[in-house]
Length: 185
Image 1 (cartoon, rainbow, N blue to C red):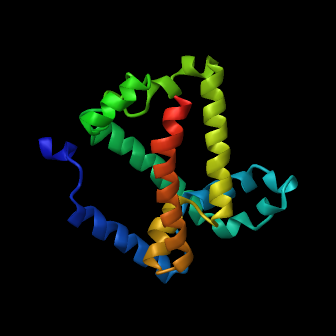
Image 2 (cartoon, rainbow, N blue to C red):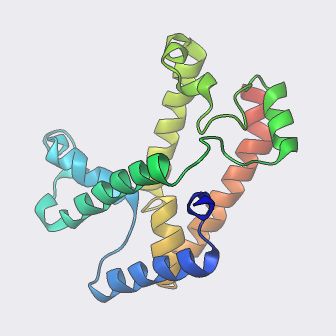
């Protein structure tokens, strides 16, 4: 039964992703989580405040199935397919994160220093999470989609704007982790 806890090999998971992308392309749909969040915000009434959320969400209700699948898949993966809740990361990265004050690095899935309930009482943590959330939301809106939408759906559809966006995401991630992250923490 040990095999069940191993990551799926690329030759299984890759074709599965490609098959889903093929199905979405055939029915004229694009994959992306930010579109799902837009649908939820519209259902909750955000269209009363902002024009961006004024659209026929019922035409996008298939997005709700994607969210439901992500939730169910995450639950199954974390409760039935994971032996250890720690993320396998490079030991050098663990040392670097420990030096920055993240003692949970390599031991838990999420850094407890940011996501424990007690952390929400720390003003610095709240400010970092709020600014990060705003930047991610702004970036997804400005780029016309999120990282998953551009990297999976856009690139599989050979869209040049998605390639440019993905290159920008990687450059931004490198700048964040190598320059800004050490300055913040």
